[in-house]
Length: 118
Length: 115
Image 1: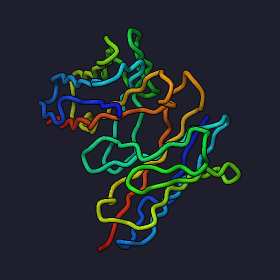
Image 2: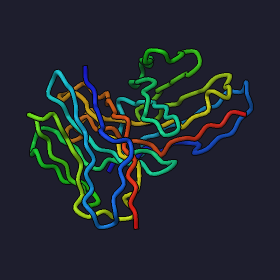
Image 3: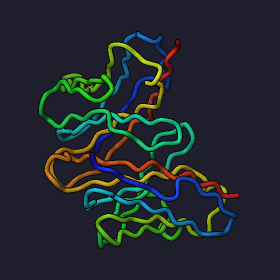
Image 4: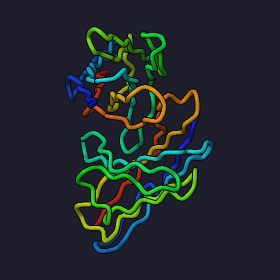
């Protein structure tokens, strides 16, 4: 199956610093990547959708300048939380999909990144 | 617009008992439907998916789900629960067809398995 990795798996940072999270598709080319945020005991909230080489499309209520998304290649997307604050602490999950037959709109999820802002 | 409703935020079953997790969807177009499982502090793993082929879909770990258009349902079942099935389960829907990949998730159902 298709494998998606995320790095780091956990990060603790001080308030005001920026944190970058990487999402990689290891064995397929991901034409689209998604970033989700998950609060404790809650479902996944889609933050943004990014297509390779294009600007990300953010969901309503998600600050574009706060959560910078870059999808520079078909195997890598990054999410940068700028000037992080404690309320940004959360579990961030990326997923990737490919426009090839057999995937049927399936998204392959990374293992998630736990961000804690002190 | 699409939406998913998972009935029951928390379901408890005894080990060896039937597992039934309910999912109803709303979609203005033919949907694709998915069930994902999430273990603590991990990402989501696909259990099974419905993509307009057979209405009874078999997935991993002994799970299966049946797509019922008349009931707009896609309930997840497993004949005999195992302790390792304890996790959070998410039902999701997306439009069928090429070019549209956004998933809409339900709020999740936490499954507890009692020894």
